[in-house]
Length: 402
Image 1 (cartoon, rainbow, N blue to C red):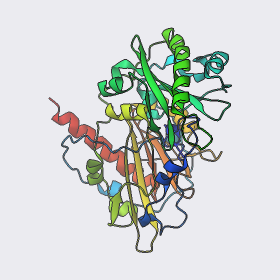
Image 2: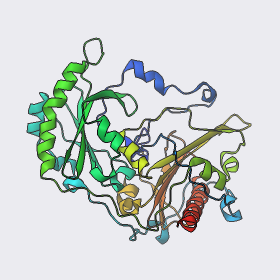
Image 3: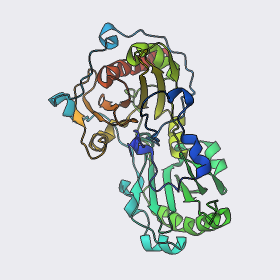
Image 4: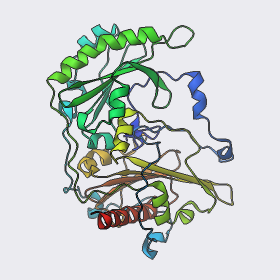
């Protein structure tokens, strides 16, 4: 959604892009090259998701779930409806989802004073952009990026301490200089204030040869962290949206694949896991996935005619509280999305320009949960199948729970 290019864009995926990620470096740019097998497809645009849109790490959960074959109504794939007509059910706003508490009123501009940040960074800071993915926001997370006049940026990610795994706490207790997102790099360190965990990142300051000046980047990080510590000390403590029984249960990509007619969707039984271009994630989205939010599944294959078809599914349990913002920001290239009826959804929007400019995206909610479906030749019928699979997984998980 910004979520996350790019399919930002993140996805869902436009939401995953963190604003002002550092300059692309030639050494890392090689990661964006399309795999050799996809080179045969005409005009495949390499777009990066974030958050996150962002959404590149496959689920690792392996909870056994009974395979449920799709019903005839969900496995039939009618001709794509690319210009759906608005309907009352498609435009209704969901009301049954619980909301998180987000620091600074969910407003990056309220976090720190630009003059103070500029003085600390020794470079003029511009107005910040908000870039948290749907999954991170549902955890109560806020991600902000401040572009600096020297072409770098400073980023802040705030989450409730209760949702941050110990491994992340330990890793970022001291300064870590690393690559992140897709082609970003920089130095980062986290601190805790009460029940709030904050990760601050200074993107790499480059030398004349375009190599990162690590010491200068570390010095900037040390200088700006006190500004964020002072800001968060008086901020509202964030908290995740309360989980309810209506939230979709975690599902692995293999489980989802077994419940949907994937070969029919892609027009070929010869498909592969993944997608023939690179995607990047960052710490907040990795934390969200560890909590069972924002999982992503990807498949692609080539038809007998040599056309590449793909499917990207992003799952956001409990995210319907954010639906109005999701729907309003789903459009690409300034073109507003179109409302559409989807069986099993109380609201859905679709439009052109998912990962490839000529492919479609669809966001849908059942009033509690949210899913995004990208790239499928027929996003409407595919979403019906996917939502039925997610519902069946939740029922089975509940049935097996003690």
